[in-house]
View (tube, rainbow, N blue to C red):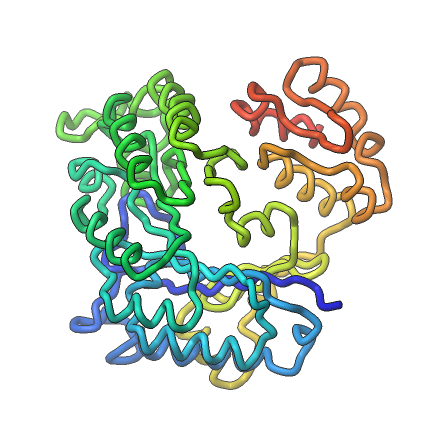
Amino acid sequence: MKKTLGLYIHIPFCVSKCAYCDFLSFPISRDTPPPDSISPDVVSQYVEALIMEIKNYQENEFELYQVGSIFLGGGTPSILAGEEIDKIFQALQDSFVIAKDAEISIEVNPGTVTKEKVKVWERIGINRISIGLQSAGDDELKVLGRVHTFQQFQETYTMVREAGFGNINIDLISGIPGQTIDGFIKTLDTVGRYNPEHISAYSLMIEAGTPFGKRYGEREGQEHIADREILPLPSEDVDWTMYRQTEDILSSFGYRRYEISNYAKEGFMCKHNTGYWEREEYLGIGLGAASLIKDTRFRNVSDLQMYFERVKKKQSAREESDTEVLSLKEQMDEFLFLGLRRIKGVSKEKFRQCFGEELETVYQTAMRKLVGEGLLMIEGDSVRLTKRGIDISNAVFVEFLC
């Protein structure tokens, strides 16, 4: 019996870099390529390199696996032409055994989707569309540095629905500078009425090295902001209210929270992300893509020219200095932390099967304390966070490391 494998395909190009984004991606235009690009059409060159990397995996250890999910992320994968996506998938089909019921997702941004692309996606087997909306308010989209409008989202959503896609996710962000509780509630209500199968709702993170990082720094350091034209971040109380409102409002539209930041209609949990939270093996393909195979975490090189050179010579794209063989305890910790992000929690039996030890023995002290504080509960085979535990999950996870 073949083992299950998830594939992540990284497309590191965007129309424009958002003010909050610290992902490995960069803006690029095929009409005016960046000065440091190594080809007049760096996107096309990247696609060819990506295909070479995929083909390099033919007839190796991955022939023992069956791919259960494929996720095209970025960046903005929908920036690619339909024929480029087609070529990538032809290489994937030639190199891997893909399950007939595999979940195949593509991240798209409004304004980069056309009917021609949608037809190709449907033909090659993509069956899940993840739309990066973030907000239903155009003013908030501008603050985030998004290059699309809400109307463009509407056009994109209608386009993929009319093409027959029945599994659509919409990404949202709360805690946007200048955002009010009423504004976020309006976004939740608006998106809920579109009735997508899945909604991911994340709180804005201020990351170092981003425009937001330079502008705001740490939340506690906002007092240094003297420019009245710079919108302030919502207060912690406002941010907390948005967080609590998310589940209440989305549940009224029939969504069930199944992970800290993810909500789905019945039968539409994201298979790819669920595999990640359950520590299933996954292979990352493309610039800087991360992987977990057996007990080893590794990632590809993040330098574009080095990536091109490696795959052209049929060498491994892996960054050897960023390879980590996890100890048994590290694997157990990961299994626990990722599993506790899910509302249903962690299975004691699965923990025993994976590691040959009892969950309650390995984490006896922390579990006893957290149960006593009402942050953790044990019911039959399940160990999971309480509602209060979910709200302060990061603090809970720290207890397991003490």
